[in-house]
Structure formats: C-alpha cells, structure tokens
Image (cartoon, rainbow, N blue to C red; front, side):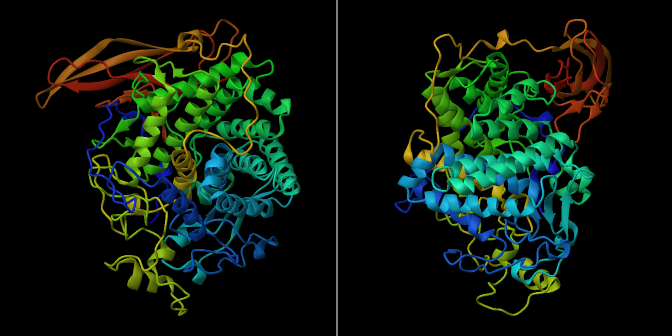
Length: 638
C-alpha cells in the first residue's frame, strides 16, 4: 500500500477547526543541530532536503551521485512505446513514475531556487539544487516528443503495490501512458508546462540555450493543455486512485499561464490569467490547501506578486481579486480566516489537514507564507487584512512558517524530527522499497516481489539504507506517530514534501529574500496594494435560516437548519458553476447538496445570475444546537 495524501482522503475541508497555535516547550537543540530543540541547523537540513532527491532518481545515475546505495534502474522505460522515457523521479516509496506529482515537485524545486537561490549559494547548495531541477526537467523534455503528446506515467500503481522490490530489480509493469488530442489531460500538461517554465528561469543565466529549449516545450504544452481540455485521470484511469485530479484542470491552466508570464514577460499569458480568472476559478476559489492537486493558492500568490511588482498591465483590478484569495489563504493558516475555513492544529501547533501525509500541506503552506511575506515586505506592504481578527503583519506569516519547519525538525511534543537523518531522533523505518531492502551494491542477489515482502517489509529492524533528508508523512492530529514500515500514512516519504521545504529552509538559513532571477520591484504611486477585503464583493452569498425541525435521540437534541445560497450577480450576469460549500460538523444528513470527493459539498446544479438554491443540514447538542459554520470554498463564473 502507498499513500497519496489528498487522493485517498475524504473531505478535509469540512473538518478544519480554527484552534489557537500552541507551541510545544522543548529542550534546547544539541550542538549537532539535532531535532528536539528550539534552535535548528537550517543549513544542514537544507543540504539533506536536497540530497534526498538523489535517492528518488530513476535511470542512469551520474558519476557525482551521492546516495551510494542506489544504482541504475528503469533502463527500458518507454522502449515498448518507441520512446525514451529513462530518467525522472519515483514519487515516494514505490517504483512508479507518476507525472502529475513529479511535475509539481519540479515546479516547487524551481520556485525555491528562484526565490532563495542566493541563500542556497551561500550554503554551498545551489549547484545541487539546480541538478535536482534539471533531473526532472530533462525527463519532461523526453516525455514530450511531439507538441500534442505527453507521456504522463510509467508503471502502474496496482502491480507495483503488490510488490516490495528494489527499483534496480523491478519486474513489475513498466507500461507508459500518454496524453494526446484524443486523450487530453489539461491538468497534467498544464502542470508540466509550469514546471518547464519555472525551470527555464533557473537556467536562464547559466545555460540560455537549455532554458530556451525548456521554454519552447512549456509553450507547446500550455497550448496543448488549453486547446484539448479534459482531466488527465479520465484519459489515464490508471492514475485516478493514486493521484486523482479532484480540483479539475482550471488551476493548472492558470498556474501554467502565470509561470509563462513570469518566464517570458509576454502579455498573452498575463491576459490569459486575468481573462480566465472567473471561468477557471482563480478569483473564486479561496482554499487553505496547497499541493500537487490544488494550485489555486500558488496562482494567487504569483498574481499578488505581479501586482506588488507593478507588472499588471491593464489587469490591476483582477489581480487584486487574486490577491484577496492569497490573503484568505494566509489568514486561514494563521487562524484568522473566518467562515469556518481555518486550518486546524494539533495540540503541539502543527497545521493539520488530514492523517495521510499531512506534512505535504505543511511544507507547501510554509513556502507560500514565506514567499508572500517577503514580497509584501519588499513592496512596502507589511500587513494582510483578515476576515476574522486584526490585520496580520508579514512578519507573522514568516513566524508561522518558521514554527512549522521547527516542528518538522523536532520542536514538537515527541522531540521527533520528521526528516530522516536529521537530529538524534528520526524515523528509522520509512515506508520506502529501496531504503528498506539491502542495497544492490552490498548484495547483488535478485530480490523478488515475494522475497521483498517476506524478508524485508515486515522486519522489525531499521532500514538498512539511510534515506537521508526525506520528510515522512508526519504525525496524526494528536501529535502521535508510529515509526512502523507498514504505517504508510505516517512513514511514507514523497518528493513533493521536500520540494517546497528546501526553499523555506534556504530562507531560514540565509535570512531574508534574494532570488536568483528577480526583476526590480516597482510600485506605481497610484497603485493601491491592499484594498480592504470588503472592496472585492463575492457574487455568492449564503443566508442561514432558522431551524425548521427538532427532535431528541439518546438524550441529545437534533435540529435541522435550512440555508440558501444565492448568485447576486446582476441580471444577465455570470453563472456560478462548481460551487463548493463547507459545513462545519454536520451531525446527520445534508439535503440539497452532494458530498464532494474532497472540499466539502457541491451544489449539484449551476446557479444563474439572480437565482438561489436551498439546502439543509442537521446539528446536535445537549440543549439548543446553534447553526453550523457554513462557508463558500470555491466556485467558477462562466
């Protein structure tokens, strides 16, 4: 079994609680920079966070490979399809090359370098970070052999997950799956376009020819994604239960256009970002979750960055609407979001979304918070206006990001570092095939699928190979953690856990911002950077009505509350589609809404301008049960 975080989870949004941050009191860190203290060796952690990617490499390993227990693997990938697909990254503890999370990983590695490359250079890690970006970018160039063709996966999760085998010994299927005009995948193609656009900026100065090659592939993939629209997991059902695209492809199309605008300064991509903000959800989705499936907060932070830098063209008003949602994301992380959408916390202070690989959301949020705060500060805009509570200073965003990183590194109630190899206490039994089986370099005897499970998966001892720098899934909602190989929800690692973390670690190691390829920030005198949230009105309005019925059962009183949701757009205005609504802790049936695969409940029909729809839910209490928190998670206007 492997963990896919968001794909396997039920709606985490409906269970989010706004709880005060409680930081665990812990002992001072040791001189070695170990976990368990309030001070940490961020430079050491940065080095390890980048080193981990070498353990995930597929293909022919280079001469400067530092993870010595790994060897060449996947050398026939793509051969049966007549294409060279050797290379790339394994996503987690398995041996499948899933294109969707791999592309997000490369995007976030590249963004980390762009924002904090100077700090990486000061730590002696910039070259290693650029190598990590290039390993993924080179693979995507291979996976895009024609303008409207993209290979999105090599291997399949079903056969892989009944096999425990080193990647060097693989006997499982290496079938390759592709997208083309008859089998579209706007989300996967869009994310890959974003990855290559971001990577092109990383190499713009040092290798302009290579950067141009990446940018050409990025432009073609964006055009392919936009022209032939569809969800990639509909075209590649083999990926659906592992990395299903629950948020659809709107966020990836906007994400790709934002990265292409940053990489090219071509107004075409800014126009796309602005003109499609309503229809693709960028101005309508205000979510507190950022990761391989949901890119909206990342898009919104990039749009806010363009606004703060004065790179708006005629679209300042639309970019302010994007920025409003960036503010909602930041405030929700801080517990000041209002409307029931605040991120929950463990008793020890960790941001908490779900039990399955929760740390992927923590590292992603920490990166966005740090980047947004740094760009606010650089532009002279030092506060974020929140719906609930006083304005938040940019320094609060950085402090929250730091607290989350410190928790991961050991400042938590267990004194446990959740980065393998960092500190004195860290996971020894990560759910990872290669790390848990003796290295092929130490024992070249073939390990079959059955042998792997019989002799290695269930053994009680520590993994024979150190998966240095890997960030595991992390603790549960009560700060509990079981270091067991079969506890894949908590002990499996993932590339997309580490990719944003390397940027935050570089920022903390070096202090302040100072990216690799940042343009000069301009602030026009006539630009209002942070309008009040009320200045950007939402067309969607929810009205809570009185209880319509009540009854008693087992000594508790239950009440059914009615509510209406309305599209307040003027007559002839836009229609609301894909409207997602959060309901905090319903204790019975919900009528008039359908349970979404994730993100609360969804209105089953569109809502034309001026129309309203009714829904109802049940809450309980020993006495009068108050209405539940009900809020709009997101929508699209068409």
